[in-house]
Length: 111
Image (tube, rainbow, N blue to C red; front, side):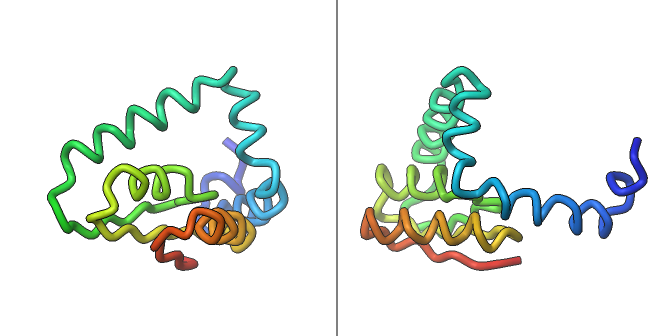
């Protein structure tokens, strides 16, 4: 394995700029690369979370990226609070734009 992928600090220094670079096209890329299957697994995960998360719960979406899952959960479970955490500022910017478009109460944080 490459050295920059074995060391967590070096890996993060490599991964974060990569996600910053692809953020504006990330959703289109994953849709294309997965042959559209990303929609199915994301829907299944949102459905599972919606069925199992207690009423009024606080949910943390780690590595939220563009906010797909977090916003999906808020659409079907407006009674829960959802926060999205990501290291990529540009991914969070995309998630923030979506949050604004959907007028969703999604809290976003870098980290």
